[in-house]
Image (tube, rainbow, N blue to C red; front, side, top):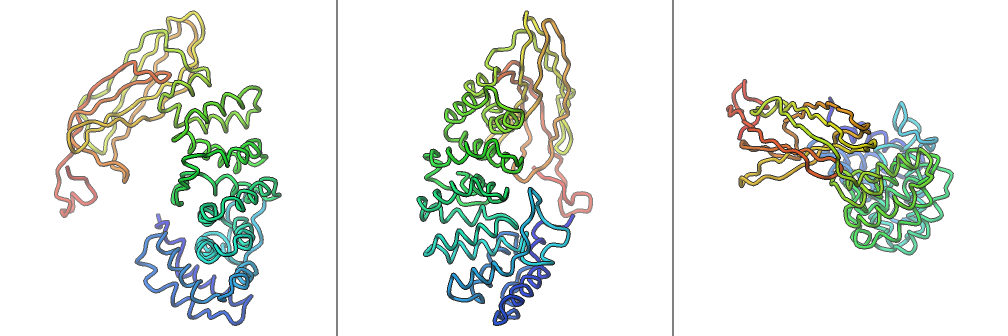
Length: 391
């Protein structure tokens, strides 16, 4: 599989240069290309975007309004509806990943003229996204930006409406953290209310992710939101609210579980069985659980599990994984099975030792079992050991 960073390639730089020269004959395409490709292939993705933005700064007109005019004239036609991308990127103009450095250019040069910068981002987001680029403007001039976002919430373009939510997320991955909104998310709540029943699933998914961001710092706000907006909600809004609730449900937050009618403890018996008690890194931990209801009424259950990973200092830290959502009838017995992968991932470092798995029903731990994780020690420089982990 080709590395993701290659979406920002020398070939893409060449296409950008062609389109910019097409609309502005005085644009120095060779200088732009030379600057934007100098060392490009040695860089990771974000660094590539920043290098291309440097090249735009060096070659576009010094006047910000004129520079925006050149960029806007070079854009491809807007993506229709919820469409993301085209079959032949940048054939008809700037679009897609070519616009990440364009958005960065606007963010760097536009803080002195926020309305003009937002006008440019309104155009950019209809061919890619401006969720990263708009964030410095929220920090710099929140009054102007939020007044604009309120208008954009009714924009005909789903891409613009999505930017209203995605660009103002407090904790957007890869974007700068909007600490003022982490501390107080109230400025974005009217925007989310206006968009949560949007006709576009693309927009609604952003609203759900935004609410999930808020839940990490202000769980009671999101519990209250779900409680208020769940009653009589259409299916699309219910799906949005479930997605917005995922972090709190996974964490066993009692208020959120209660908001979904999942606040009651399981009435019945639970048996947890590990398929093995000793695992090798790179393999799987098979396990099964048997639920036997003792209740006289059906029970709505969220069944998750946590793996307690051994850390370098010997302590253990739990990581919760999604399991099952089900309804158990009175007296019913249900057997559930899972093979949990124990594979190397970039976000986790494994250590040998006694790990544990616990079972959680409606947020409460109901069963627990230990297992040993072994890590094969192979010299990674040998042919047999290349790509294999060491302790």
